[in-house]
Length: 392
Image (cartoon, rainbow, N blue to C red; front, side, top):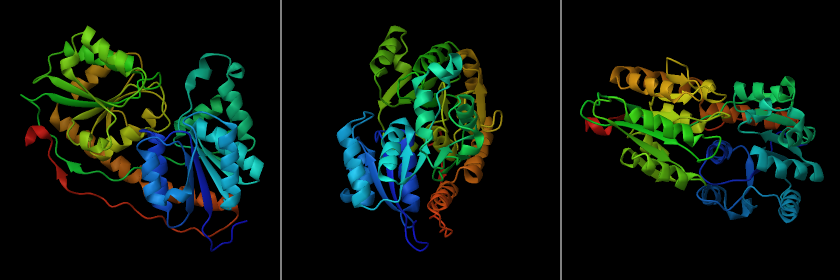
């Protein structure tokens, strides 16, 4: 048991450190709690977060493990570090991180917390008992002291897939730093600036984004539009080729991996998401914190973030025309302004980093058997107004 006045030592395991929501979540959590918790991180040597973790904690607190691949040598190395560093608790993030962290916790007798960051709905469309992912989560869950869902929708999905019972799950919504205030202006004579974030895989659903761009190109948008697509992935080249095949390449900028996505958000008018499922998407939260209205598929995670008709529009997954109708509505600057302000309020009240960190720290201390809870550092709000490019 950890003494009441000591800082708990927590090992975070995550099987990816490239651009993505889960690594950013870990980065913000560690940053907020570094004065209250002695963190160590096991993660791959991916850009950009591996180096960011080293800069924040020092090389001696970082253990390199393979990118989304399980090896016995990495498990053994992680167990050795857990014993040598006297780690009290392992906090696993995502399926890959869970496959490392939970067996190591069992082998070393440590407490373990698991945050899943998105539960795929695939098992609902087949016999759940034939899905190895369900069985993996179910079995490893038996050796888990606490499981965190990042949204109520993810909790419902987890229960529906027989992975855990409701009382075994704790909901701690994702948090993001405050963004900048902005002023939306009419885009008459200027292209409407859209942005989307993708990994070009089945979850992010780039095929539907392509259909939206295609349908939108045939609509009469005053001043036209331009879409910036952020992200990398195996399907990126195919997506780019299909843009050329449909003569859409001049309407889209393929920006690839971007270290500062908020800079792009601040130059944009709205964010479009076509995901087939999410946990609680950080891209949407960050965009809303920057005052962007959202057009997103009505799926788990997205609907936990967006208040339909208030901070954005939710469209039926598989219906790109409905998404285009929503985008057209948001060509009205007054609606974008209203939705953007509503989104910023949602982030401030429901998704602050301070709230996320405080709840996580309480869970750590509850599991470790202590009662002392320190308040995490609060993030600094940036309150300078932002004027989009078309107003400059």
